[in-house]
Length: 202
View 1 (tube, one colour):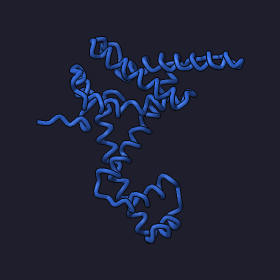
View 2 (cartoon, one colour):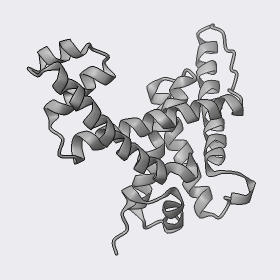
View 3 (cartoon, rainbow, N blue to C red):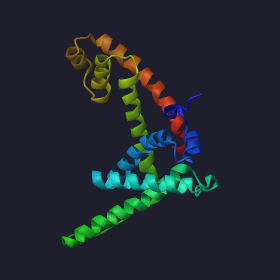
View 4 (tube, rainbow, N blue to C red):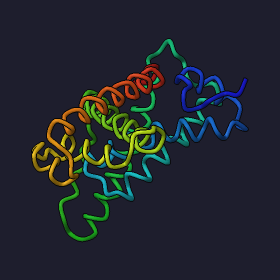
């Protein structure tokens, strides 16, 4: 039976990651957690480029250490381990930025965020990344029409009034609310399934 990386749990992905030839598994793990780490870096003031570097360095260090057998599940959840790696990389990026500021004669204060705050931000950004992935799946892998999804986005995500959305899409207000209910139900199903795959590392 073919191993479906998109529906695999974190535990299943980790089992496959022991084999460096499992490129599809690595890509799926990367797709799940790179956006979260990038967001984490940006939330603590890093530029997009620095946040991307932090994500790359964190994931590379994670896979290297994991394949070397350094992860001990008994010492904590996988999320905590990834956050600890990211914390060091964020600090390194902040320190490099502080040095650049010092060269320009600016303040060079560099304060690394504590683990509790990092964890809280990680949880918030995990939820956001998961929702965005669910929306991508809704757009690209369901039979719901583009017009229906756009009407849903205008009403729910952009916060436009139902009357304005109905007029814009040449629909009735009643149809707009039916769209909202139908798409919300499907989106919740997708989110619930994705949550089950992320759960081990959430």
